[in-house]
Amino acid sequence: MSGAPAVRISIESASEKQVQEVGLDGSETYLQPLSMSQNLARLAQRIDFSQGSGSEEDEPPPPPGAQARDWAAPGDAEDEEGLVKFQPSLWPWDSVRNNLRGALTEMCVLYDVLSIVKDKKFMTLDPVVQDPLPPKQNPQTLQLISKKKSLAGAAQILLKGAERLSKSVAENQENKRQRDFNSELLRLRQHWKLRKVGDKILGDLSYRSAGSLFPHHGTFEVIKNTDIDLDKKIPEDYCPLDVQIPSDLEGSAYIKVSIQKQAPDIGDLGTVNLFKRPLPKSKPGLQLSISLCHSSNDKKSQKAASEKQSPEDHLYVLEHNLHQLIREFHKQTLSSTMMPHPASAPFGHKRMRMAGPQAFDKNDISSLQPNEGLLEKIIKQAKHIFLRRRTAQTIDSLASRIEDPQIQAHWSNINDVYESSVKVLITSQGYEQICKSIQLQLNVGVEQIRVVHRDGRVITLSHQEQELQDFLLSQMSQHQVHAVQQLAKVMGWHVLSFSNHVGLGPVESIGNASAITVASPSGDYAISVRNGPESGSKVMVQFPRCQCKDLPKSDVLQDSKWNHLRGPFKEVQWNKMEGRNFVYKLELLMAALTPC
Image 1 (cartoon, rainbow, N blue to C red):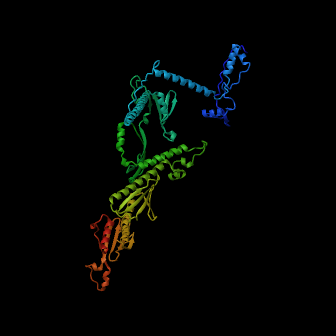
Image 2 (image 1 turned 30 degrees about the vertical axis):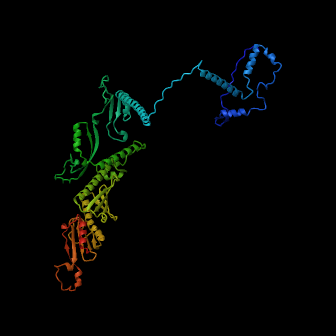
Image 3 (image 1 turned 120 degrees about the horizontal axis):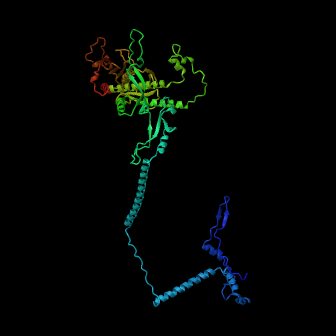
């Protein structure tokens, strides 16, 4: 309507970018907007140079009705002005022309201002005071300043961290002091079984869940600690709860397994002699004692226990084996599942429940049992540990008592609970490389010792200590003869005879004597060595007949060629020979009898 006022409408271009592609997952790919240079090129392509330049001279004359529009109403003029204002420009360089015209106007104004200032009549210019520039500093000074700033920042960070740590420590200490009964009860419940019976809180100290058959109930009570005044300063070791343990469970209890010598027979106590004649006295032997010891927290009992125990009498290997045995027993108790069976079913053999002459003996009962009992396993382990310890003591006593030859024992770290192995080497000092003949492997069992020689021979020894000692002495005696044989090969001497068991001479109470006879490379001299476990070593030398001055002349051997034969043997005073051991003395003797 012509009478309605004009309304201005602002038209803006859409700010959204044009969508180039829409993916299968719904993502959109947009086109990047054109730069100023690209936009200028796009507009220049639209110029039609065939049209006029748009100046006033080239403009066509106005139409005849244009004068009539000048005399139109004011409202119509405003409408025409609105239409003209929003009419797009027909010339694409119109904006460039306007910008150039504005720049020309500003340059003209600037020129006029400068011309007025130059005359200094109407306007003057005052200089602007500038801040002085800081003086140039040394690069080392700048480096020190930067380091100082960085150190100050690091120190500030550390101080803040220390303050936080101190605050957290103070808060933790305050929380520890202000622990309540419920939190401590929750912590106690994590380690022990607790249950509420009425108004009481009871716990279980027994090991019945692990298979223990101890009849004690093992119950303790948890109560609230009311002995301290909370208004005063709370000590650091304060605990808001208290535990009441039965008196028979206070302290510590342990199982003691001991091996005693020459102890009285416990079974003889309370027996009655039904015969008139006295019973023969039993010989002292070994006794295995298994006892349950209980010690309280008193200082007297702790002092007495520390005085009785000594580290030398403690069997660490037996303790380790018994711990493994108990753990295995608990594991079998927990893992064993019993199938349901009627209550009236017979339990085993009928004679197992009978007493008297018709009852089973120990051998029959043990044959019916599929597995060994706990007591039998403990006894076997105790026997093995005692035999192992006795074997080690025997070897150590021989090594400390006898210096030549030397005996060495190498115990294996990987052993069975009922069997241990040790490697025994018998060597001579300084001749370990050539004297390797005696190497023994001892397998220590429960009641016997198996000896495996280097050549595969197996000898079984009993648990008697003397038997093992005699065997090792005989092996040490044979080692000396074997060492002479190896030394003769190195020195170039010839072995004439060798025997581990000599049938001549005095009889040895321990084993048999060994002997060897060797001859020099030229055959002029001969050395005979006899060594026994008890008699010791005896060395004799045979010289040529020409060197024997006290030899009587024979009427039969008249020719001089018989003088090259060896004469009788002469014993060497072995104690007066120089040398650190037997093999070294014999080496010196062979060197003295060998011609250059």
